[in-house]
Every structure is written in structure tokens, then in C-alpha cells.
Length: 511
Image 1: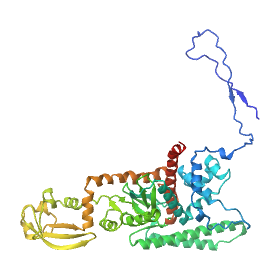
Image 2 (image 1 turned 180 degrees about the vertical axis):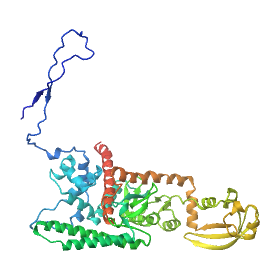
Image 3 (image 1 turned 135 degrees about the vertical axis):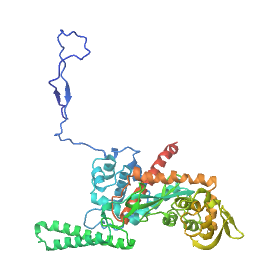
């Protein structure tokens, strides 16, 4: 036991407050000296810590640990060489590392160094580690490695939530969101820039080979060689990615697999395209993927395949936005046991005509179609005859054109076809039966009401990943590593939903 130290504070002014009723001639009363407790930072204290009482019984970290014990984590044990009866250091328990990362992600901690420092004093991490410590390299490598084991673990969590009724597969909202890459926009180079980078990497390696090697700097020399080799490898991969993209594109020399994508602000920045599929019942993420695609139209069918693999079936309805409802996707989804719900998109031909100076009176809706003669009649009574057909995906585009002499003599030429060198041209699109049926379906109030659910479900998952999990920018480089980073964030979102459901069910079970 140490005695508390006190101090008498000198120098306090001994005068009454401004509201004192004493007259000015009366003597001032003496003020008592203050006694303040001092802080002794030089003392040595021996503490007795009950590890199990570091966190409450209903703490999140206990729920995470109990949940992981229900799952099959055997795939994380593959490759561990530390076994009984053989020399060597014990391997870190994968379940402890797993619980650490899920708990850290729940609290918004995403970096290995930050988690290693945080685990020294945070009660939940101290409880998981048993007052021990873990190296930041071990933590960082654990996130990037075990790709197959992470996917298997994610599927197990989804199936557990399905068994509890949190996933019903009645409606699944699929959406894509751009997440910033770790690369800088200035790291993107074209053919000439990549050639300069290759030359600089070669000169750096040649300079290292010419330096004299001594025993005192052998360790530093190896580190410099590893850095030079890593730089040369990144430049080589950037050159391969540049060739894969084609002429006119650029590749990053720091993260070759990142792509320059248009953002909501209107500019371009290095990003990855995260594809998220969310069940409508409780907001559970049932599938995820990271793509290099700059737009989403080609990502719907692979997403449906992932949903089937993870849940064993396709949803009754798949809700998507206008970036996915192309005619090709409508035709492909019509052959699957799921109903596609989404906007087909607006006809942009009218806006093009307005930019060309066509007045509202001569828009295509004011032209009358004659099916018997297969022609159009313009508002001035002139005929636009059929010329040719152009096949498209899920539709056939038919072209109709008026006589050049009729348009030249027309007094409304400046309002109807001011920039046409020949007669006025009209396009008629005949869509495939599946596309036409989809368009009629989406005009019904019932399906418009269902589609409004998409933003509530899909955008919630995107906001959870970016706001609660802090995944606005990837910390790692390369497609495989950022895919693992996204997988851990999606896994954490689902575990958080499981914890919330368990707390709702606990009072009912006790009753």
C-alpha cells in the first residue's frame, strides 16, 4: 500500500468574491489552502488480473469466439508444420487470429500494425490473447493468405444464417460499388513511361551489383536487393497489364491490377469494382467478388453463379439497377430459375435528336407507322420507306428514310432534319419476346414497388462496408489480396448480423 501524497497550493489570492457583502474597510478572511492529490508516475505496481473478467458475459468478443467454435476451421490448419514431438516454435492459433480480425473489423481497425498495438491494451483483444501479444506481420499475412479457407468460412456463416431464417432467398439485391485502390493516380504510365520505369529498375539493380559487399552491411544489402527485385517485378506486371488492356490505356507501376474508373464525382481514379449480393430478409451478404470491370453489365451472370454456389439455389427474384438490365442479361436470366427486376433504361434517341436541333413536333412519336406497307408517314404527309435492318442483341433495328427531294422541298426541313444530308431517317426497334415481356412487366405498379426495395437492401450493404468497416480504400495491392480484404469485411458484416439476432433471441429463449 502506498500513502497518498498531498500538496498545499501556495499563492492563492486571499480576497473575497466580487459579490462579498463585507465593506471595503473590513479585514479579508484567510482562504484555506487546497490539498490536491499528486500523480506518481515513478511507482511500480503489481496487479492481479482475472483474464476472464476483462470483458462482460455479453461482450461481442465472447459471441465471436463462441460462434467460431461452431464452425469447421480445419482448412486453416492446412500447411501448419508445428506438430507434437518435433522441434520448433508453436504456431499461432488460427481461431484466435480469426476472432481478432473479426473483432477488430467490428471496431473499424483494419491495419495489422494498428491491431498489434491495439491488442496490447484493449480488453477484448487481451481476453482473446490471454494477455499475450501477436506480431503485426503474422496478422497481416493471415488476412492475405488462406483464400480458399476464407471462402469456405464465408459459406459456412451464410448457411448458418440460412438455418436460422435470416436468409430466405426470396429476393436478393445485387449491386456494384467502386472502392479506391492503394495505388496513386500518378503511378499510371503508358508505353513510354513503362519503358523508363524498366530502365530505372535495371539501373538500380546494376548499381547494387557493383557495390562492395561487407559483413557489416550484408543484411542491408539483402533488403535493398529484395526491394529492387520487387520493383522490377511490379514494372514487369504493369507492362503485362498494359498489353492486356490494349493501346491507349495505362497501368499502375505500384498496383498493376488496379484500373482507372469513373467515380460518382465525375473524375477518374484507381479503383476496384466490388460486387455485392445481399439477401432482402436481414441484409446478409450471400456473395461477393472483386472485379476489374469499369462497368457492371457483364458482372450479373457470374454473380448468380456465386449465389448458387454459396446458398445452393438462386433467389426467387434478383433486384438490380440499370447498369445490369441489358438485353443480353435479360435473355440470359430468362433461362435461369430467377426473376430479374430492374429498370430497362431510357431511350436516349430523343436526347440525340434534340441536340441535333429537331423540334418537338417532329419527334418519332409524331410519325405514324403503316404496318401494311411497312413505312412511316411524317407530320407533313411524306413517306419514309423501309431501307434495311440491323440485328442487335435481343432486338432488330429497322431503318426508314424519306426521299431526299421531299425533305429538300419541305418548308420544315430546319425543324425536322437540319443536319441530315439526305432525307429524314427513323429507327424502329423490334425487341425479342423476352425483352418485350420484361419491359411490360416493369411498367406494372407492383414491380415498381418491388424495385424500390433494391436501394434499401443493396445500398445498406455498401454503406456498412464503407462506413462501419472503413472499406473506402483497400490497404493491400493486387487482385487476390484485395479480394481477401473484401471477404473479411463481408464476413464481419454477417457475423455482426448473427450477434444481433442472437441477442434478440436470448430473452425469448430464457423465457
